[in-house]
Image (cartoon, rainbow, N blue to C red):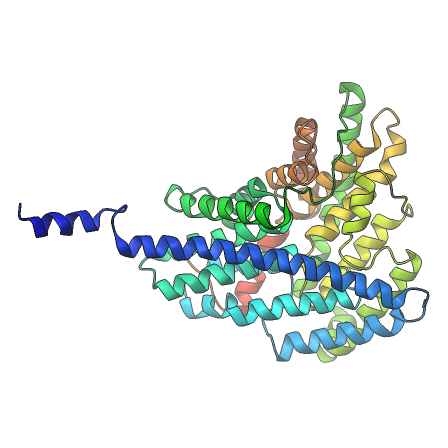
Length: 440
C-alpha cells in the first residue's frame, strides 16, 4: 500500500482524526464553560437573595412594595425582551430533545435565552421570589453545549441530542456539586433512557464539570453534612410516614403546577389572560403576605433554611413547609423565570422537621433527609435522582437504603395524585405551544 494511502487511513481513525479531536476539545471546553457559568450563577444568586433580605431588614412594609413591582417587571421583561425564558428551564430542555425542527431548537436553546434566564432569575431572587437557580442552570448548560454543537456543524441528530443532554447534566452536576446526580438526572429525567452511543459524551462532560467545580470551589456539600443513621424499627416507621406525607404533598404541588400551565378555568383564568401583569403583581403581593407570616423564611431559594435543618442548628416555624410550598407555587405561576429544585428540597426539610416528633426514636437529621427525599421524589417523580442528589448533597451514605425506599414509596403515592411526571407534562405543554414535536 502506498504511504499516502496509509496516512489517509490513519487519519480516518477516531484517535488520529484532527477533525474529531477538534470536536472533542470543543466539547470539553464547553463543559468547563458550563461549570464556570454555574458557579458564577450560584454566587450571584446568593448575593441577590442576601441583598433582598438586607433591604427589607426592619422594614416589614417594604416587601409589600418590592414583591408586586418586582414580579410585574420581571414578567414584562420575560414576555417582551426574553420570550421563552419563563419557568424552570428543565421542561424546555426536555422539549428540545423531542423537537425535529432544528430552527425551533435553536430558539429554545439560544445564548440569548440563556442570558435572559440568568438575569431574570437573579432579578426574581432580588425581589423575594421563592425560586431556585438549578433548573435554569440546566437550560443554560444545554444552551451553551447546543451552541457549540452548531458551531461544529454536527452531522447527526443524535450527536446534537447528546450535547443537549451533556449540557443539562453538567448544569446539575456543577450547580449542586453532585457529579453522579448529574448523570442519573440526564438518564432518568431528561432522556428517560440510556443510550450507549451518546453516554460517553454525557459522562465525559460531567467528569470535566466535576473536576472544574472541585478546582474552583473545593469539595463542599451543598446542604452541609449529617452522619445520622436509622435503626430498623424506627427506620420503617420514619420511611413510611415521610413517604406518605412527602409523596402526597409533592403530588399536590405537581398537580397544581400542571393545572396552572393549562390555564385556570372561570373568571380567574380570564383575568390572568387579559391582565397578566396585574396577575404577576398579585402573585408578588401574595409572596409578601407569605413572607410576613413566616417571618421572612419563605423568601428566596430556601437553601439557608434547609441547610440549617440538616445541620440541626435551625428552628423554623412549624408552618414553614406549607408556607414555602404556597410561595413556590405563587412564584412559578406568576410567569417569571426560576426553578423549583432548591425550594422543593427546603419544603421537604420542613416536612421532615414537622414529622420528626412523631418518630422520637429516629434521629432528627435522618428525618430531615427522608423528608427532603420524599417530597422531592413526589414532585419530580424521579426516585433514583432524588436518592442520589440528597445523598451526594449531604455526604450521607449510611441512609442510602432508607432514602431509596422513601423515594420509591413517595413516587408511588405521588402518582395517585398526579399521573404524569411534572417536567414531562410541562415539556409536553411547551411543545404544544411551540408547535414542535417528533421523533424521540
